[in-house]
Length: 404
Image 1: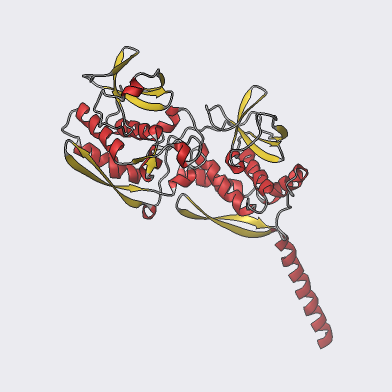
Image 2: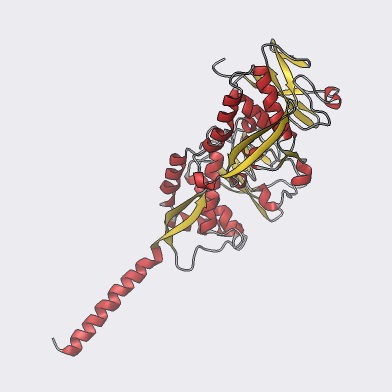
C-alpha cells in the first residue's frame, strides 16, 4: 500500500473512531457534585449535549422531559437510594436529597417547571405517589401522605390526602380561596408508599461541621453554664418543614454530637438530684438561655422548630421552647408528659411523684404544669401566667414512655 493510501486509511479510521467516541458522547458519563448534610457527594449521571429539554413553563413539555429523565437519569435512583440507606434518612430528609439532585439537573432559577418535573420523577421512581397541579399559572407538587399537616395546601383525591411540597416556592401565595388546583399529571404509583413526615432518626453528621455554643442561665442565684455543639446547617433542611402534629415536632431526635454535648452533661449534673429538682432546672435552662421572638415577626407565618433547630437558633417562640423542654425531659428522665395548647400559647405538663401546685388530671395521672416560655416572673414548677391560667386548653399530645 502506497503512502497516500496509508494516509487516507489512517485519516478514515481516526475520523470513524472519533465519531464513535463523539457519538457516544451524546450519552456520556458525567458526575454531579453537591453537598448534603455537611458531606460532599458525587453521583454518576449522563451528560446530554445541549442539556435537558426546556419546559417553557408549560405542561406540554412534561412528557418530553420525563422521557429524557427516564432515559438518562434512571441510574441515579440506586445512588440516592444508597445514600438514603447509609444515612437512615426519613422521608423528609430523603426529599431534601431529591431536591439537591434535581437542582443539579434542572436549576430551579433557570427552569422551575423542569426542576419540579424532575422532583416528581425521582419521588415516583422511589415509590412515592406524587401529583402535579396548576393554579393561576403556578405549578404545585403534591405528595400522598397520611400525616396530619396544618399550614400548607391539602388536596383530597379518591379519598386520599395529598400534601403540597412546594408551597414555599410561591411565597405561600396561591389563590386557593377562589380556585381549585387542576390536576395535570398523576403518578403511576397510586398504591405507592405514603410519604411520612415523622422523623425518628437523625443521621450522623460530620463532626467538623458543628460549632460550639455557650448556654448560660441563672438557677437558685447561681450562674449555670453549658458548652454545647450545634449543627447550624440543620436549619436549612427544616426551613420548609410544615406544621405537623406535636408528636412529630417534639419527638424529632437530637443528632449524636448535640445529644452528647447537652444530654450527657445534664444527666451528670442532675445525677444525685430529685426528678422535681431536675425538671425545674431544665425548665429554667430552656426559658432563660434563649431569646423570645414570635413567628409572625420572624417569618410572617407559623414555623415550628425541631429541638435541635431551637438549640441552634438564637430566637424562638412558645412552641419551640415547649418542644425543646419536652425533648430534654424525655431524654433525661423519660417520664409521662402532656402538651397543652391554649388559644395563643403552648406549655407542658410533667408527671411527678409529688405533683406541685397547678396540675392537670388526665387519665388518672396528675401532671404538674411547666412554663418553658419566658414570662415577666420566673415561674417555678406548677406556676403559670395568670393570663394563660384563665384560658381554655386542649391536651394535644400525651407522651407515655414505652418502658413505663
